[in-house]
Length: 299
Image (cartoon, rainbow, N blue to C red; front, side, top):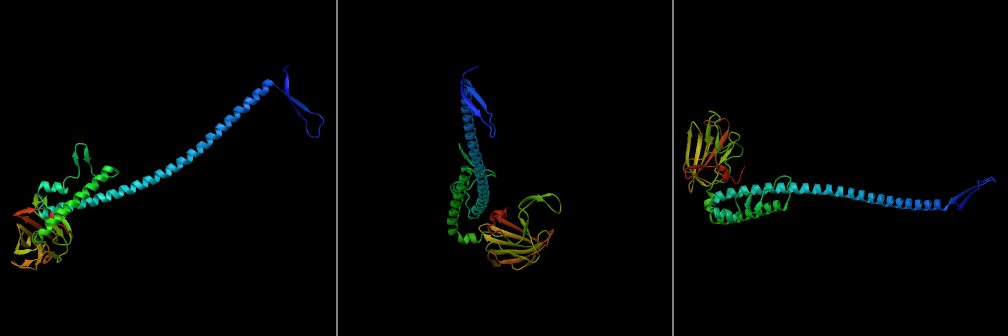
């Protein structure tokens, strides 16, 4: 039997008997080492638990921050898309203005920034903004386009200041208030169902609504035929003429001078028409041109 080094006496309350527990040196060493190991394990578990709690809280905070960043990016994306649409609208307006003031040189257009939306030169490629994309390149595109449009307006403004009289006789407004029901170009004829080139635009409205002159000029003809019914032709000078067909009633006469916005007739459905509308054409040097590029003040 090994030598005892520690004895533990247990005396129950109310009893005279007792119990003695003895431990050897080996047992004590095992107990001490076990207690030390358990203490280390307990400390390690406690530290790991605290670390997990801190990590969990940090993760939750990151999730909240990430959600906020997603919402912010969505707002930025919406704003950039809206801004891009506005810039594209201004760019289209600038192109129309170029046509009217006579900016046609490619060098001038290049200087003032009118051209394709995407331009590439080596590695410097600028792409238009697309949904879901927010990058410095997109912002650079919008900034560059805005600067180019501003230069274009500045150039056009300088020309306008020197061409006030000429521009007054350039068709720039819609001839009537209504809905555009036919565009310039090839289309299926509503009567023959065959392809036919439509040399103007059709604006539908109510019978009797006003039709106005789209620029200063002189009424050249007031006539009537089977195709366009009652029609008016106005000369504006510098090769421009405008034609208004399917009218209901004439309010001007041949040889009369008119100003932009003057009421010249009532909208109707005379001639070969499927309903009340005005057929509107612009001719430059006896050649039909697309009125879309001249409508700066669309009604």
